[in-house]
Picture 1 (cartoon, rainbow, N blue to C red):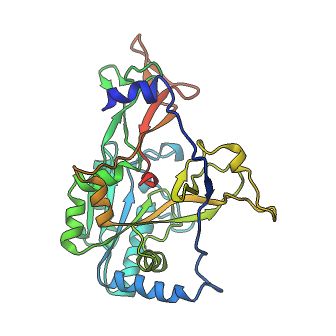
Picture 2 (picture 1 turned 60 degrees about the horizontal axis):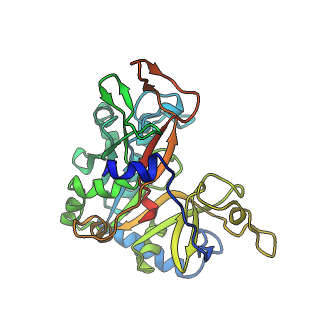
Length: 332
């Protein structure tokens, strides 16, 4: 598969065809004062699903804390201003709070990578799983892909070691299937997966209203959005493409559309993706089944990564020097 992607994604850039008919995606307002009356019904549905054990938390945690100036798994980064608590602890405390409120502890699935799997498991052990039962936290690893030089050759991280990188957050769906996590969910009666990424300390790991809206709307995948900070903010854009809901990554969004305004002067494409989703377990099973005709597309990412040059010397680049291939979960 890697070889087939070289001519289309490495030595040349994939052609991104923006749909001719691109419209802003419909969005539901946030909950709170003045919320629509039907939100009460949705909140009850979400709370019922949580009490019945039908909702699990899923954290994508395969990254290292390098960009944060931290040596270790990103989830071990201490971020809270007063207690200096790590990200993993914040999520664990939310799950314990959910258990106290609803009488049911959501099962927690944590996706690591070969880069940080051992360290992540050791970190949980060191902190006694932050008060959670060990058998309610499930670790599994995502796949990796080779990293390429722009000329199509595979990059080396050391003289005799191929440079590897996780296959993107879209690879999390395949990892759920290959690890047996989906089978575990089915056996336990878990129908809804609350997906979030590890580097978001503000996320609600289990949000009753969000779960409930997903349930009452009979959705297979639901996403949270925020109002964009500016026209060209580096977030995905929720859109309708020929009537179908999609996300156009900021790098693929035509600038003319990103800057488009409504008659009242407000931003036309204003819903930005923050990588928080609810997915039906059965939907992920269909997406990842061996006979599924649906495959997530690969995306090119130009990155700055230390590599070994032709003379066997480690080179730290000043700018992007390699190509990583990734899948995006919002393409589901």
